[in-house]
Amino acid sequence: MPITYDQIAPSYDRKIRPLERWFLDRLRREAFALLPATGRILELGAGTGLNFIHYRSDAHGVATEPNKAMIDIARVKERPGGVTLVQNCAEELPFARASFDAAIVTLVFCSVRSPAEAFEELRRVIRRGGTVVLLEHVRPDGVLGPVFDLLSAFTVPLSNDHFNRRTADAARTAGLQVIDVRKFGLGIINLISCRV
Ligand SMILES: C[S@@+](CC[C@H](N)C(=O)[O-])C[C@H]1O[C@@H](n2cnc3c(N)ncnc32)[C@H](O)[C@@H]1O
Image 1 (cartoon, rainbow, N blue to C red):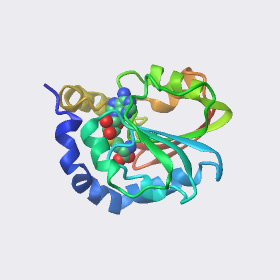
Image 2: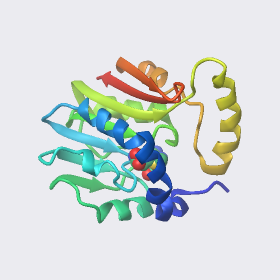
Image 3: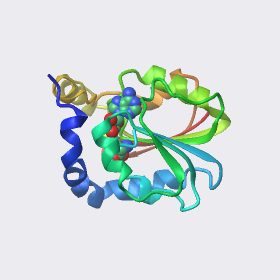
Image 4: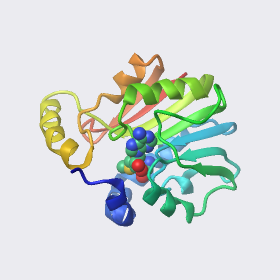
C-alpha cells in the first residue's frame, strides 16, 4: 500500500522546510510573479497552503485540494480573504467553463491520477487566453532521464509520486500553448508557463 497524503500531511511542512529555504520558496515566488495582477485565480492541489503567503493580498479565486488531512492544515493558515478553499481533485473540477483567468499549480502533476484529464479540466475552466503556471518536478533530459525512470519504479508504488512525468509535453499534448519552460536543478524542477 502506498503512503498516502493522510499520513504525509502532519509532517509535510516540516519535511519540506529545508527545500523551501534552499530554493523552493524563491521558485514559488517566481511562479506567482508570472500570474496576472488581476483576475480570478485557481490553484490545484493546494496541499497544506504553503502558497498562501505568495498570493497578492487582494487576490481572489479558489484554492482546491482533494485530501482532507492536507486541506485541514491549509484551512487554519492565513490566506487572502478573496480566496476560498474547496476540497476537490484536479480531474473533476466543480466550476463552469471559463470561470477563471489563471491557474497556479505547484508540485502536483507528479501525483495526479491523470495528467491528461487534469489539463483538460484546466482548459475548460480557465478562459481562452488565460494563464496556467506550473512548478513541477519532472523527468530531466539527457542521461538523468533513465535514472528518473528507475526512481519512479520505486516512488510510484511507495507514494504514488511519479518522478518521470514530462509535464510540459503533457500540457502541449492537451492543447495548451507552452510559452516558456525554465529549468532548475539539472532540469529536474521546471517552471512552466502556458496560455490556454
Ligand atoms: C507534494 S504536494 C504539493 C502541495 C502544494 N501544492 C505545495 O506546493 O506544497 C501534492 C498535492 O497534490 C495533491 N493531489 C494529489 N492528487 C491530486 C489530484 N488528482 N488533484 C489535485 N490534487 C492532487 C495532494 O493531495 C497533495 O496535496
